[in-house]
Structure formats: structure tokens, C-alpha cells
Image 1: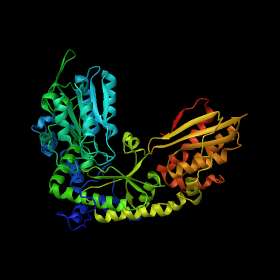
Image 2: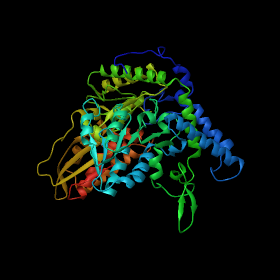
Image 3: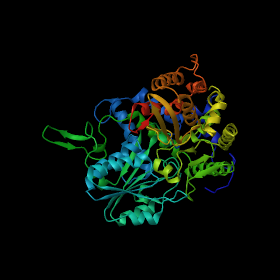
Image 4: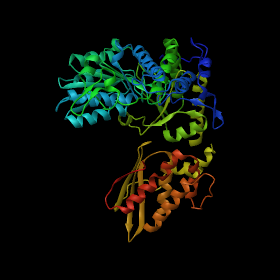
Length: 417
Length: 149
């Protein structure tokens, strides 16, 4: 993003008006005003292609997967496994069996913490995370540390909201077994130097999990280029259904890991004496999954990949740049998260107006933002604020949305003057 | 939506800007902390209760305009009330902010300005945080953290 650049809707290489028509929900009025949806880091809206994929699945293919011999089951299995292939390509995983379909990022992190974490962590070992993590990349590690006697270490961030790499390096030790970091911060927008983090961690023999929840809708993801050991993301933040997502894992690690949950589909044979587990990826997919959701997740991947991703990112970053410049002009604003590499998120406060009040006033103007701690209480504490207002951008946002945000903020200031 | 001006009435904006009884209370014999994890609103309430009567009340903390003004107006309303009266007032306040939007507003003096909150369900917790904290404070001898969750 180039700060200060002010784009117009026509400078981008893709047609945002056409994109908006793909999202039925955007056509509505909220409190009599045009809906301006700037809460994309929380969850994204769904294009018609995804909504129709869910409908079509239930109308034409619904059955349980991997077990029955009838036509519908074959169709359902084909649709489900087809989505796994799309997911593999989306993150450029070397093998399809390295893709575990999950309920989302939180589910994926808990799986790795409980299965891999309990396998490798011994008393005195360490798990290293960063200060900018979402609660879902903190709490699962606290739980497994408690269970194993390992210690959670936290690498600091600087005033821009960037990871202090030297401190991170200093905190990496021979006892570090696992490093878990966000690809993109949900509260600050910082893009972490994941490739460098992985290199440093591997040099110490630690495995690296990357939380890609906020990166997935914006950045191309290549787990082989990143060389990470685990990568997790959520479907619902990238225009797919809720309760879908993927965990990529290096297959040699996934092979060694014990199952996370027991149940149907994850076994090969069960007797009361001994159960043998299924092969990858099914070993980690117990019970009937969210089949329709996964099919919709596949449709969301297709939707996103139908664009020139570089052009989408350029569009989103231009909006972030414009919003940053215009919000900064409002007297009494403070912006949190000014990393040199950032995307998607503008977090800020207004003097004398609590973010929660601003959120209500913005909502009355049709502008949906998140105000609060963004599931990142340590980040709020780090910057000494109880909460921030967060505007976050997606593929369908426009420069008019930025203008509506700024106008609504002015209205809030007038009200609280 | 209902008019924003129903929510952010002059009295509320004024108490947000200049909260009354906003200080620690020397010699308080009840103290409780309130916390709304949803938005991070946090307040500490101090009470001096003597012979079952609230003699002094003060608060400190950070929060949105609704929670701050509610705490401020509550401290004004409680001074001189018996514990039983304070608890009864809690019930009436709670009924007012959680009533359906079209229900008639029971007169509650200055506190009636919070009737507008009922049209903003996500803000009810902001208005009631101080009251929940008070309820805990009068019941307990030991300080404790109260949550609206």
C-alpha cells in the first residue's frame, strides 16, 4: 500500500460494480441508508456462486460421504473431495492428503496444539508466539502448555505494530518446539515476514504454524514457498460459508500425529481390543463433516481465483490507503498499526468518543465496522487503549464506502462535540 | 432504527463528558469491579454503607458514553438510599432498559433518559454494568470482579 494515494473506482483493473452485483446482501438498505460493509476482517459476505452451491448441493447431491454405495453418496463425496483439491491448489500444497478440512482457523489451531503439541512438548519446552496474535492463536497454546508443562513465550511488537524480529530471534531457543504466528494481524493489519520467521525457527528445530485467517482473502498463499509446517485458514473470511476452513500440514508431521478426535470416518477398523486409524487426511476428520459448507468453501475458492488476485489486492490496498489518509485528517484520530507491510485493516480511535459509541453512530449511517478489542486484548493493552474502531476492506468495497465512513465519523464528532 | 437522539440524550452526553462522583472513595466499606468483556468497559464502584444506608458512592473506570453516564447518574440516584431501596431501583432500571421498545416507560426520574437503550439491544449491557456492579457491592463484603456476560 502506498500511503496517501487516493484512487478512484475506475483506476483498478477489475470492475467493482460487477463484483458488487455478485453479492445479493449488499443491495439492501440499513436504517434507510445504503449498506456500507466494512467489517470484512470479522466475516465476509457471500457471493451468489457460494449461496447457490449450497442450495444445489442440498437439492441435488445431499448424502453422507465416503460410506454408501449409492449415487447420491458418490455425488456428495465427489463434491466434498473436489473442494479439497481446490483447497490444495489454493495454498499450493504438494499433496492433497496434506489438506485437512476443518471448521475454521480456531479448529485448525486447536487440532495442531492438541495433537502435535501434546506429541512433542515436554516440561520446560517452549512455544513462541507474537504479541499481535488473535486470542485463537494464544489460548490453545496456553491450554497445551498447561497440559504438558511447556512454557508460552511472546515476541514483542513495536509502535508501528511490527514484529521485533531481533527480539523474536532472541526468544527462539533450543527449547522452542513450536512457533505460531499470524500471517496478517487481525487488529493491526501487519503482514508478518513469515518466510524469515520460518527460516529462523527451523534453524532451531522448531515447527511453525501460520494463522492465515486474515491473509487468505487478500494474499496469494504458497505453503511451499513459505516452507511452514502448518497453515490454517477460515472459509468465512474469504467469501465462503461459516464453519469451514483448512489445515495444511507437512505430511511427515501429520503422519506422526495422533488423531485429534475419535469417531466415524477417521478409522480403518474398530474392535474393542484395537482400533486402527484411517490414512491422511481422514485420520483428522472424525464424524460427518460440514459437507455442504465445504462444497460452498470450494465455490468461494473458485470465485476468488476467478479474479486477477494482484488486481484485487491493488484495489483493496488503494482503499485502505485512501481511508488511512482521510481518517488521519480528522482531528483527534489515532491510528494503530502503521506497519510498512500491511493490508486489509484500519484500526483507530477518536478523541473523546469511545469506539463502542462510534460503532452505534456509524451503524445508524449504514456503516458496519467493528468496535472493541478484536479478540486481541494483548494488542489493546500494548497500545494502552480499551478498544479501537476497525474498518476492514474486501473485494466489493468502493471509494464511496470510504467516503461514507469518513462522513459518519464526522457526524459522530459533531454529536459528541 | 430509532433515532440516535433517543440514545444519546443531552443528559447522557453531559454525564459522559463530566461524570459526577468520579473518584476513589476514602473509607469506603464496599468495593466491586465491573467488566464487560465484549467492549472492554471497566469500572470500580466504591460505597460507604452505614446502618443499611448508602452514605457515599463514587466510581472510576473507562467505558463508552452509555456506561459512563449510567454509572454517573446511578451514583447520584443512590446517595442516601437504603440498600433495599437501591436493590429495588436496580430491578426497576433493569426492567426499563430490557422492556420491549413499545412498552410504556415507568417514570424513573433522571434515570428515564436510559429508556432509549431498549431500542439498541447490544447497548443494554453498557447501561446496566454499573447497576450489576452495585448489586454485587452491596451483597459482598469482599471486592470482586463482576461481569455482565
